Amino acid sequence: MSNQLFAPFPPVPTQQWESVIEKDLKGADYHKKLVWKTDEGLSISPYYRKENLEDIKHLNTAPGCFPFVRGTKSDNNWLVRQGYCAHEDVREANRQALDGIAKGVDSVGFCIDGSKTCTTSDIEMLLSGIDLEKTEINFEGCRCATALSYIDSFTDYVKKQNVNPQLVRGSFDFDPLRRLTTKGAFCHPDSIKRLKACVAAAEALPGLRVVGVEAYGVHAAGSSAVQELAFGLAMGSEYLNRLIEDGCPADEAAHRIKFTFAVGANYFMEIAKFRAGRLLWADMVKAYGATNEERMKMKVHAVTSPWNQTVYDPYVNILRGTTEAMSAAIAGVDSLEVLPFDYAFRAPGEFSNRIARNTQIILKEEAYFDKVTDPSAGSYYIENLTQAIADAAWKLFKEVEDMGGYIAAFKAGFIQAQVKATAQKRDMNIATRRDTLLGTNQFPNFTEKADAAVTQETVTRPAQAEGLTPYRGAQAFEELRFATEKSGKTPKAFMLTFGNLAMCRARAQFACNFFAVAGFEVVDNNRFATIEEGVTAALVANANLVIACSADDEYAAAVPQIAKLLDNRGILVVAGEPECKAELEAKGINHFISVKSNVLETLKQYQKELGI
Image (cartoon, rainbow, N blue to C red; front, side, top):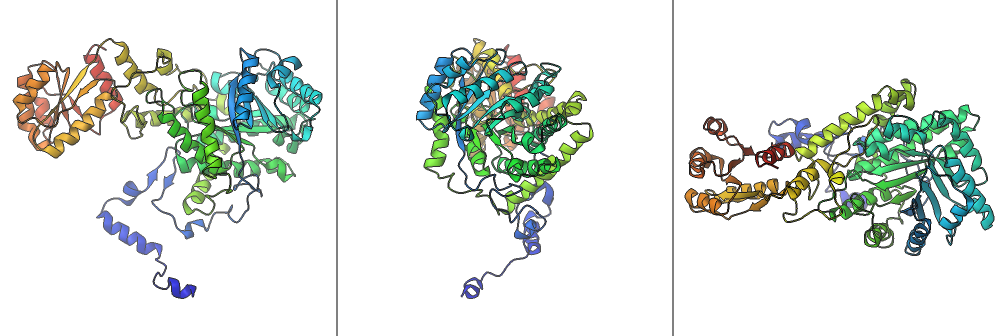
């Protein structure tokens, strides 16, 4: 029966597909047109087939089985984490945590003041009323001088609560390499030497991870997914080396390490990144001498990307956080934190925390993302992407190891140079709108003003430090628009539409979008009957910029006429890159905008000409 059912659909060989594609391309370069080159340096084919799985070794494994590509457990139940600031008011942090737990949180993250030591009474106040057998407790902000006091105090508190130590789950992000990565130097010369003491202090609590690998700090500086993974693995390798050298068994050392990765905007890339990470870490831990497969599992916490967040049109951050959370959930992370949509510019309140929390709850309770383990398994594309990321990350990781490990490579400037090169490419893609930040460099809300909480510091990219400096991809455009808002001026861009209706409307819409990005007031018009009528309307409107919008073949004759009528009473801009551009430039018309423009630099120049 099955043969009869599919008889009309015989298999089509790849070569036959390729011949049809080449015919449709009509001589265009296949690789330039259809093969996608990613920031990671990967070449992504336009389609994949079953034959592309033949050389992939990690297939035919089950979730929870070595090398854990398909997840470290048989189900896909991740923990919903939310962070609370315990810097200033411990009681308030406790209140917020209890409220979050009552509303669906099962993993809390307390951001602590790592410069101060901790006592059992401090922990009692912070964790009062929290069931330690049901809620994971995480401490963020640990420093080398005080981390041990927090671990000891937490351990003492657990003993006093008379709970089953086997059920207590939590983590301390003691991560000496984080300080080196972000500041260029350790907080203390003996930071790394204190790892063993932290591991020993947690001996009575097998579910407590005390060494953090904060790979998301690499992501926050503009890295690619491959770089974040490779350098995160290099940090983990550095910690394993040091712990084993200090007498800690490989199984125990690996079991005490927890990774924190960011979740970027590239949906499938991020799914594959986590799958590849588990594969590589399992192989690494085994190579270090671990014998217990349970200890070869990578413990992964994921955080939605702060690099992708914007302060203009901030509700778009909800959409960004949702798709990023979907990637992490499909990839099978152990816990996940969705950053509130206003995280970039103010302390999140109840509303934004609720939206962030409910994003995950909806993925579980309504979209059933926790009901299927590794749903991307077997996908020709995802499996190939997983292998490609694993290969690329392993290659980069080995380069770091050949230099003597993470510390040596960082001190040599290798890691910074790699990340900065990628960040510069990403910045250029945003500046030229090859990459879109919705509401910021493309399709802005024309009438929006920045939230009152937004300051100059919020939109200004930090100066480059010795280490990897975190920033947001949107900041250059945000600073541009913020400057317009605070200048006290309202530049007006007037669309002088004429000639061909379809072309003048298309270019007017493009130009409106272009100038609104900088916070300029845009005045659109359907189409003027004559050029004279359009110029008169522009002068009446007191336009600062007059944008000629029509078809290319109209510009040679019309634009010089517009310039003459305008008589320098506004900046004349031509929408497009017409063949007559050189001819127009020879007549003193020098302002053009098009899809080829570096939008950021072009708008900065217009601001300068307008005295902003």
